Length: 97
Image (cartoon, rainbow, N blue to C red; front, side, top):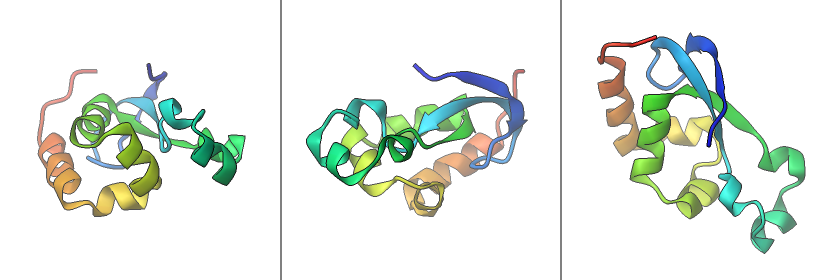
């Protein structure tokens, strides 16, 4: 479950709304030996503050393993064509604060 943060601008859809914390390497992967060997605790806990709609979309399109191995940075999330289309769509939706 993600922590709710204060309102701000989502770096993915560029809307001003409440933000949640998204672990760039999902917490489910933190105990796996590959991630324990290649990343320290600080790296495993890195994340970004994004809106709930973008957060849900990221997890809808990709598995935890795909996110952990291929989408570990905000830049990689923004460069993905499928996610980029989704973020553009979210950016046009009404906001409920």
